[in-house]
Image (cartoon, rainbow, N blue to C red; front, side):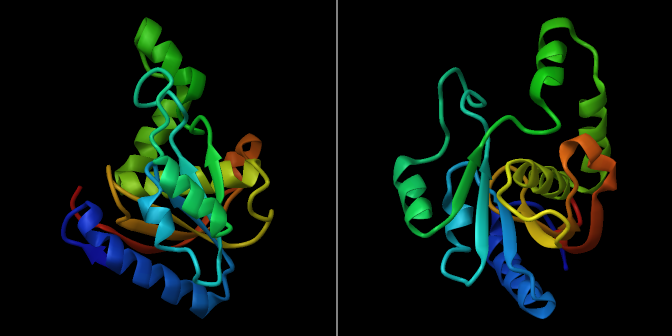
Length: 181
């Protein structure tokens, strides 16, 4: 499915497509990018292991956690695993760029993946992050859901690799993405 434009307007259709693909392929794990928790909440009670990956504390400003405490509590109560950590393709490379300028290998990788859209890049990244954290099983296909700014507008079927073997990641299908972003 190709959406005419990017953004959270596509979240309901992305959710529908993800649930149908999970059923079709027998996939049990979905990894969802969700800073506020709103998007991840949509996948609770659907018979899936839901992992929510958020921005690290401090992404929006020093000491700021973007996830609403009520949403965090609802996600945890619903059995969702929440991963709040530094993003794989940012981290200290971004710190070097911010301090000294230039561009570094992880950022080049991120910009390259963005050729497929922000949500596809995010989906690949968060799948590896969830695997590194032990929140999804190694060697299994999962569905990863990302977006452009807010909501969900991209989803992929992926067998992620650990970050130390990132290039072993296999993107099997792009379920949906915006055509223009």
